[in-house]
Image (cartoon, rainbow, N blue to C red; front, side, top):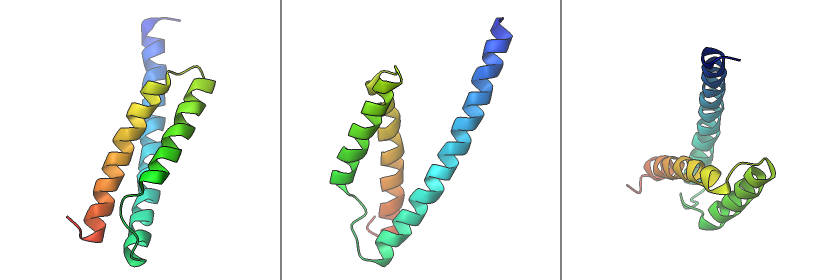
Amino acid sequence: MDLNELRDQIDALDAQLVEILAARFQVGEAVGRYKAEHGLPPVDPGREVEMTARVRAHAESLGLAPEIAERVLRSIIDATVDRHIEISGQD
């Protein structure tokens, strides 16, 4: 396999990641609206701890450094929480 073929594989995987990320943020948007409608706080630290532990364990089971998966998840959580705060009007 040559470098261009490997890069094509990376490009295809990147496209899949963006599609999954878009779907993830759509669901996160629905969660934010639910929380706002039901008077729930936009941040749930306990849930974040659970998510981080689950993602780290899954990454490790796949041979991916848990720190990498956690960094990506943290970025997603931060962006989602920012949006939940915006939806709740607690800017």
